[in-house]
Image (cartoon, rainbow, N blue to C red; front, side, top):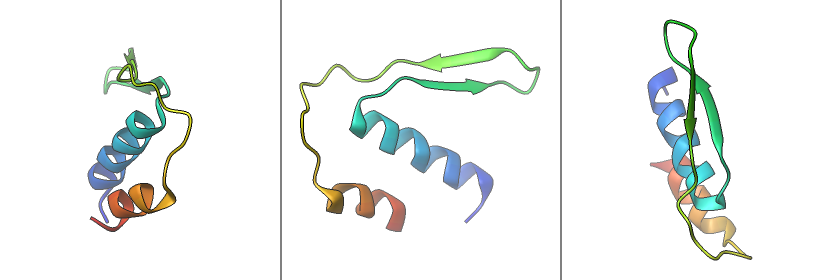
Length: 54
């Protein structure tokens, strides 16, 4: 798996969990992705596994 693929999967998983992601651009500037507003209080482990196995 390439670094780009791992990065994209990490973003998907963070969005599923509903957490804010902090990353950095090539120039070192901070980049923040806010979570999708979803009312989640549980998440099936198989959903996360599906993203990892893509």
